[in-house]
Every structure is written in structure tokens, then in C-alpha cells.
Length: 129
Image 1: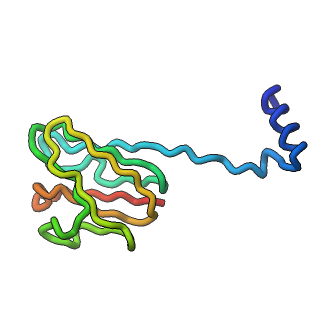
Image 2: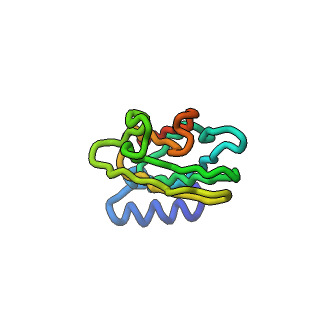
Image 3: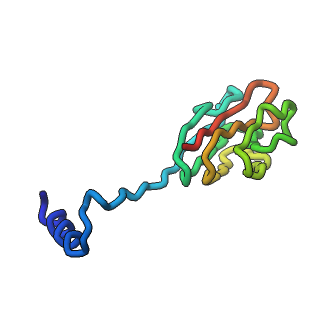
């Protein structure tokens, strides 16, 4: 045990706590998703994150794309799914090098589309645990 860790352990013991009793603070992370250049796909097509994490989508292509979590904007509304109580949201049209980020706070499975390329299979999934 290093000097710092021993000092923290002694301090915690003085407070009637142990290092084992202290919960680890989860570090929120950002996951990157790219819109395929030359292919109408999200890369990766599915990501699994923790509640509180952020997904950042980037469009490297000259083709317009979107990140659409709104079933009313889908050709097939079943291609978009949100956990109960989550309001639909959309990135708007994203030109080349545009980015869109969303922090997910509600656990569940989210399915989304590119509203311009849904018919070409541009559908993604975010699973929040």
C-alpha cells in the first residue's frame, strides 16, 4: 500500500469508514459513432453505454445525414424506438464534418435512423445500461 493510500485509509478509518465501503465514482464517457463515408451506415451500428454517457456522431461525408430518434420522422416508425418517458429528438440535417452529441440518462434500448437514408438501411442502436 502506497503512502497516499495508507493516509486515505487512516483518514477514512478515523471517520468510521473503510476504503472498501467507498463506492467507486463512475466516470462518464463519450462514445464516437461515424456516418459511413461511401456507405449509408452508422459505424458502429450498435453501441452499449452506461446511463450518463454521451454518444457523439460525426458526418465525414459530403452527403447530408441525420441522427433521428423520432418515430414521426421515420418512413417505418418501428425503426425508431425509445424507452418509456423519453421524448423524441433529432440532430437536424448534418453536412460534412458536422457533429451531434446526446447524453443518455434513461436506461433502455434506443433505435434511430438517418431520415434521409432509412430506406437504405441506415439504422442504429444505443443500449443504455
